[in-house]
Length: 181
Picture 1: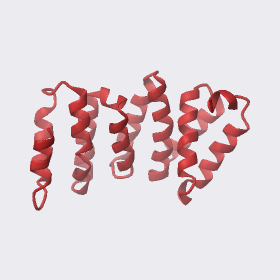
Picture 2 (picture 1 turned 135 degrees about the vertical axis):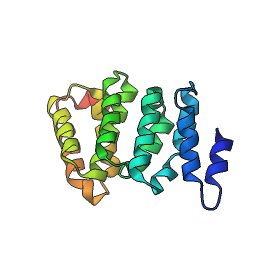
Picture 3 (picture 1 turned 120 degrees about the horizontal axis):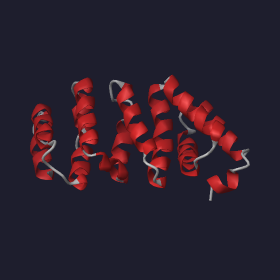
Picture 4 (picture 1 turned 90 degrees about the horizontal axis):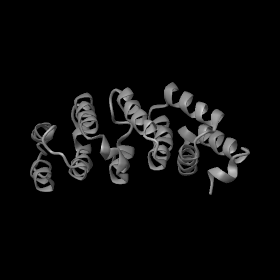
């Protein structure tokens, strides 16, 4: 797949339409999650074109192979492009997919990406989700994800208030020992 991606993306100018068409041709054909992770990591340039169309393609890829949300490398690329996806509700759907997976990896990733979602979109949905999880404190991995993201995103002015709230709430929690093991 890398050779195909390079063939489309290394042209001057990059053939984004051809790359998108190739990706669509593989939906329902390519069964291996690792291949889809490789494709996903080469998809961000598509966001330089029609963002709505690119977001739909990202969504098709993720829904075609939801297992890619279990790969840290795929989540890294998603985290780096959150803020470019339109509409933002598409990202919320991916976050819900992570939240519905009971693994600690998915729960921590959900917590981290939830705060990144807030940083990029400043949306009420993210605030409501964060406040809900801080209030019930029933998922250590998710809270660890929130704390991890808050400690790193503290430097971002747009995120400072909610990051401080997350860190203060978790630091003053009776569950603190279990959250930060």
